[in-house]
Length: 166
Image 1 (cartoon, helix red, strand yellow):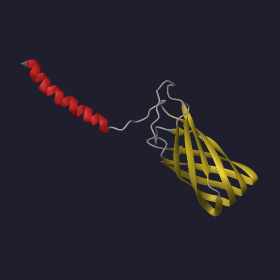
Image 2 (spheres, one colour):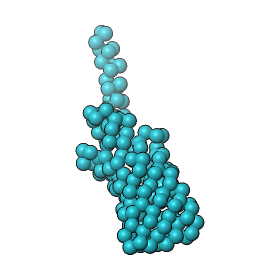
Image 3 (cartoon, rainbow, N blue to C red):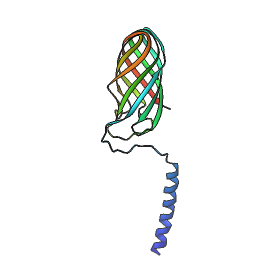
Image 4 (tube, helix red, strand yellow):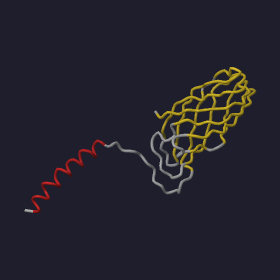
Protein backbone atom coordinates (compact mmCIF):
# COMPACT_ATOMS: atom_id res chain seq x y z
CA UNK A 1 0.00 0.00 0.00
CA UNK A 2 2.87 2.39 0.83
CA UNK A 3 4.44 1.86 -2.61
CA UNK A 4 1.13 2.68 -4.33
CA UNK A 5 0.75 5.84 -2.21
CA UNK A 6 4.37 6.85 -2.93
CA UNK A 7 3.84 6.29 -6.67
CA UNK A 8 0.65 8.40 -6.54
CA UNK A 9 2.59 11.29 -4.97
CA UNK A 10 5.84 10.97 -6.97
CA UNK A 11 4.32 10.58 -10.46
CA UNK A 12 2.57 14.00 -10.51
CA UNK A 13 5.68 15.67 -9.07
CA UNK A 14 7.88 14.08 -11.72
CA UNK A 15 5.45 15.19 -14.46
CA UNK A 16 5.34 18.77 -13.11
CA UNK A 17 9.14 18.90 -12.88
CA UNK A 18 9.53 17.65 -16.46
CA UNK A 19 6.96 20.19 -17.71
CA UNK A 20 8.73 23.06 -15.91
CA UNK A 21 12.14 21.93 -17.21
CA UNK A 22 10.82 22.22 -20.77
CA UNK A 23 9.92 25.89 -20.10
CA UNK A 24 13.38 26.85 -18.80
CA UNK A 25 15.66 28.42 -21.42
CA UNK A 26 19.18 27.10 -21.74
CA UNK A 27 21.84 29.60 -20.63
CA UNK A 28 25.26 29.17 -22.19
CA UNK A 29 28.05 29.28 -19.63
CA UNK A 30 31.67 28.56 -20.33
CA UNK A 31 33.31 26.11 -17.93
CA UNK A 32 35.25 27.71 -15.10
CA UNK A 33 38.73 26.29 -15.69
CA UNK A 34 40.80 29.49 -15.74
CA UNK A 35 40.16 30.83 -12.24
CA UNK A 36 38.73 34.18 -13.32
CA UNK A 37 40.95 35.78 -15.93
CA UNK A 38 40.63 36.91 -19.53
CA UNK A 39 37.51 35.40 -21.10
CA UNK A 40 37.71 36.94 -24.56
CA UNK A 41 37.96 40.04 -26.74
CA UNK A 42 35.45 42.77 -27.57
CA UNK A 43 35.98 44.32 -31.00
CA UNK A 44 33.89 47.38 -31.90
CA UNK A 45 33.34 49.26 -35.15
CA UNK A 46 32.46 52.90 -34.47
CA UNK A 47 30.64 54.89 -37.14
CA UNK A 48 32.41 57.90 -38.58
CA UNK A 49 31.18 61.37 -37.77
CA UNK A 50 31.91 64.94 -36.87
CA UNK A 51 33.02 66.25 -33.49
CA UNK A 52 30.94 69.28 -32.56
CA UNK A 53 33.47 71.15 -30.39
CA UNK A 54 31.80 70.10 -27.15
CA UNK A 55 31.26 66.45 -27.98
CA UNK A 56 29.89 63.80 -30.28
CA UNK A 57 27.72 60.67 -30.36
CA UNK A 58 28.38 57.71 -32.65
CA UNK A 59 26.83 54.28 -33.15
CA UNK A 60 28.86 51.19 -32.24
CA UNK A 61 28.59 47.59 -33.40
CA UNK A 62 30.60 45.13 -31.35
CA UNK A 63 31.40 41.43 -31.40
CA UNK A 64 32.56 39.55 -28.31
CA UNK A 65 34.65 36.48 -29.09
CA UNK A 66 35.30 34.21 -26.13
CA UNK A 67 38.56 32.37 -25.65
CA UNK A 68 36.58 29.26 -26.62
CA UNK A 69 35.44 30.78 -29.94
CA UNK A 70 31.84 31.68 -29.07
CA UNK A 71 30.71 35.00 -30.59
CA UNK A 72 27.95 37.36 -29.39
CA UNK A 73 27.06 40.74 -30.87
CA UNK A 74 26.20 44.06 -29.24
CA UNK A 75 25.03 47.45 -30.47
CA UNK A 76 25.10 50.79 -28.73
CA UNK A 77 26.50 54.28 -28.74
CA UNK A 78 29.65 56.02 -27.65
CA UNK A 79 29.22 59.59 -26.43
CA UNK A 80 31.97 62.11 -25.81
CA UNK A 81 31.68 65.35 -23.87
CA UNK A 82 34.62 67.74 -23.98
CA UNK A 83 36.93 69.01 -26.73
CA UNK A 84 36.12 66.98 -29.86
CA UNK A 85 37.13 68.84 -33.03
CA UNK A 86 37.14 67.48 -36.57
CA UNK A 87 35.85 64.35 -38.26
CA UNK A 88 36.69 60.67 -38.45
CA UNK A 89 35.72 57.84 -40.72
CA UNK A 90 34.99 54.43 -39.23
CA UNK A 91 37.01 53.57 -36.15
CA UNK A 92 38.07 50.22 -34.75
CA UNK A 93 38.29 49.67 -31.00
CA UNK A 94 39.48 46.45 -29.33
CA UNK A 95 39.36 45.48 -25.65
CA UNK A 96 40.41 42.38 -23.73
CA UNK A 97 37.48 41.23 -21.53
CA UNK A 98 37.97 39.95 -17.98
CA UNK A 99 35.60 38.32 -15.48
CA UNK A 100 35.93 37.09 -11.89
CA UNK A 101 35.28 33.55 -13.19
CA UNK A 102 35.60 32.05 -16.64
CA UNK A 103 31.79 31.80 -16.89
CA UNK A 104 30.10 33.90 -19.55
CA UNK A 105 26.38 34.38 -20.16
CA UNK A 106 24.93 35.78 -23.37
CA UNK A 107 24.53 39.53 -22.88
CA UNK A 108 26.99 39.80 -19.98
CA UNK A 109 28.72 42.80 -21.56
CA UNK A 110 25.54 44.88 -21.83
CA UNK A 111 25.63 48.00 -19.70
CA UNK A 112 27.14 51.44 -19.30
CA UNK A 113 30.90 52.05 -19.39
CA UNK A 114 32.32 55.47 -18.45
CA UNK A 115 35.71 57.11 -18.47
CA UNK A 116 37.90 59.27 -20.72
CA UNK A 117 39.23 59.38 -24.29
CA UNK A 118 42.26 61.03 -25.85
CA UNK A 119 42.62 60.93 -29.68
CA UNK A 120 44.75 62.62 -32.31
CA UNK A 121 44.16 62.02 -36.01
CA UNK A 122 45.80 63.58 -39.06
CA UNK A 123 45.10 61.17 -41.91
CA UNK A 124 45.60 58.02 -39.84
CA UNK A 125 45.42 58.32 -36.09
CA UNK A 126 45.20 56.54 -32.80
CA UNK A 127 43.41 57.09 -29.56
CA UNK A 128 43.24 55.71 -26.07
CA UNK A 129 40.20 55.00 -23.92
CA UNK A 130 39.89 54.31 -20.23
CA UNK A 131 36.35 52.99 -19.61
CA UNK A 132 35.01 51.10 -16.60
CA UNK A 133 31.54 49.81 -15.78
CA UNK A 134 29.28 47.17 -17.21
CA UNK A 135 26.65 45.01 -15.59
CA UNK A 136 26.93 44.65 -11.80
CA UNK A 137 30.70 45.01 -12.00
CA UNK A 138 30.99 41.35 -12.97
CA UNK A 139 32.61 41.92 -16.37
CA UNK A 140 35.49 44.34 -16.92
CA UNK A 141 37.02 45.67 -20.09
CA UNK A 142 40.79 46.04 -20.22
CA UNK A 143 41.40 49.36 -18.50
CA UNK A 144 43.18 50.95 -21.47
CA UNK A 145 42.14 50.33 -25.07
CA UNK A 146 43.42 51.72 -28.34
CA UNK A 147 41.47 52.90 -31.36
CA UNK A 148 42.53 53.30 -34.95
CA UNK A 149 40.82 55.73 -37.28
CA UNK A 150 41.19 57.92 -40.35
CA UNK A 151 40.29 61.60 -40.59
CA UNK A 152 41.30 64.90 -39.01
CA UNK A 153 40.40 65.04 -35.35
CA UNK A 154 41.54 66.02 -31.88
CA UNK A 155 39.59 64.83 -28.84
CA UNK A 156 40.09 65.00 -25.08
CA UNK A 157 36.77 64.05 -23.58
CA UNK A 158 34.81 62.37 -20.87
CA UNK A 159 33.35 59.30 -22.56
CA UNK A 160 30.47 56.90 -22.03
CA UNK A 161 29.56 53.83 -24.02
CA UNK A 162 26.33 51.86 -23.72
CA UNK A 163 26.05 48.32 -25.05
CA UNK A 164 22.92 46.22 -25.58
CA UNK A 165 22.96 42.55 -26.52
CA UNK A 166 21.48 41.60 -29.90
